[in-house]
Image: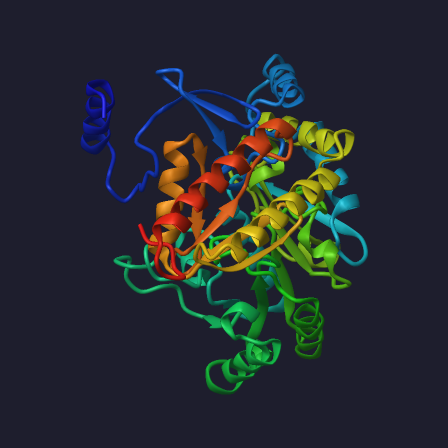
Length: 428
């Protein structure tokens, strides 16, 4: 580590609490599309995307132009005080696109956790019930309500005391982990018989593809039966699409892969191309349940972020990024399945569109691959309950030659492990 880098690390440790975990020991200076550069000029291929925020890449020119134009008009008024037209127009665009049965309405917020919190508020206001059911392995945020909803203790819940009440966790189906659709549904019946009557449950909340949970994909059968269960008991179904939305899975929303409509959908991350913006969309009669003043926030639907979101939707359509996600994801899945056959410690490969993950037998293997890829200029993220999954969140705008270069780095890293490993599992 250079003297300058060591000095900056020491300054960070003195200025910032250790609870803010940081992956890299280098500091980004600039970025463009799928490339990051540090202050020495070294480049990295970005397969993290700011944790699924940059489906349209870093500093897309159309997004930059939209923000610059808005900067010339105004930066903030608070929509609840002085409304602005582009907020209404963005709501109209999302209402037309979101997979909701019947007329939809949309409210904007700032973060994914804020969107999930407000979805819970809306569900409780509509049903006059208090119970919320989520799933093990799910991630919904770091605020207190969303911490309670998140299905992983460390590091998200540990040390933070009692969680808010009226939240229960079912089992999320995963063939790779021996959890069938029947197992998952039976866990909900257990909750109904042991913890809370279904008549007291306001909503069932799930990610159609779990993000932090390891990119586990909800089977269509599960969603169909979940929809039937929710309808039978008057429970709302909420799809958390904070990580899976805006082209990542090959559709604008992951729920579009299924013949099932949620009552509410939360979204954030790639909605605004790097600007902080989130939203809750849902059936109009459900969204109208809170009284005036019950929803909102000082920065909710910030005009710069709203302008960026309009540009993101334009880019997704004009550059056909949903189709691009399918093409890139198919290439990556083919590569990973080949790697799995080469005895390099891969236990499972799964994905939909470009929401792709590879699971290793051990977390040490995933961390070793992540670190060696970093050493060769490829930025990767791990996830999963055991930390043994690598997820791929490259911009959907990544050039073909750079994507090929990233696969070459992965091939070399996995090849090194194959040569060095004497067991089916990759070791650090």
